[in-house]
Image 1 (tube, rainbow, N blue to C red):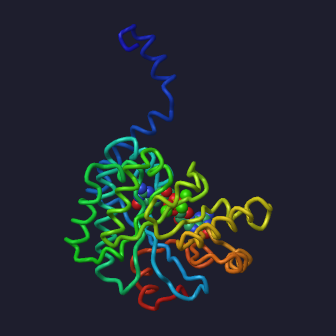
Image 2 (image 1 turned 120 degrees about the vertical axis):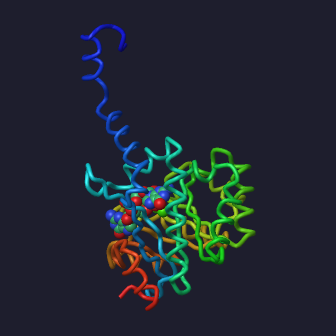
Image 3 (image 1 turned 180 degrees about the vertical axis):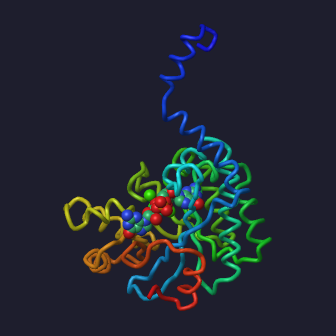
Length: 274
Ligand code: C2E
Ligand code: CA
Ligand code: CA
Ligand code: CA
């Protein structure tokens, strides 16, 4: 299209999807973000059913961009995921999480891995090498993956999860219920816990369907000997309902928003969110 004369070039430029241009900006910005120190991690506590003990923290990446201000990972992670940038970004996140683990008492840190990271060649070896270098026990790292990461190539994913679990890592299946997992397949995967997606928690007090889904996920988790973390818990009523339903852990603004490493360390030392 570019060779078709000036007029066409202009038409092409103007009609070029704003979305594509944004993507390119994000991609090139992200590739420099690490070096520029624009990335950071926020940590959100995961609490026990009685809401007293902090058992772990989920690490959530933050990007303070020059151009757009604070950008949500929901925006830039999918863009990174479509290029090899996700590996560089993921390695930075993991390195950072392992750094704080060296300073924190007993809790685990739960790190999100995108499907592409999970399917990376020698993922297991890479993770193992990183924790060994940091001198961290594998049990203190929880690997969070989504259904998408494991159901595309279930056979291979099952093997990867098995190896990770053998080595002592914790495995959480994130956003459970939103993907296309068959309940039948779940038992083939070596998991420690299921994370119930926020959308179901939101709907719990409003619609019978959401409440029913939450109850069946908790029931399924128990039957399979898995922990169940309810995420996006915002109200006291949700806490009560989840407790009654038998969720083993909770996470959400009701307890704490994601906080910086310093604040998280205070919570880790005290062992509670208050
Ligand atoms: P996620 O893994 O499902 O993380 C939970 C998201 O819900 C986080 O958004 C968290 O801040 C937010 N959240 C937690 N509790 C509440 C609540 O009570 N109410 C509301 N409204 N929101 C709550 P965040 O930090 O914006 O992250 C968005 C997504 O970006 C994550 O969803 C995850 O898929 C992805 N992500 C974040 N950090 C990383 C990372 O280091 N690596 C990868 N691969 N993905 C990441
Ligand atoms: Ca997550
Ligand atoms: Ca989630
Ligand atoms: Ca989510």
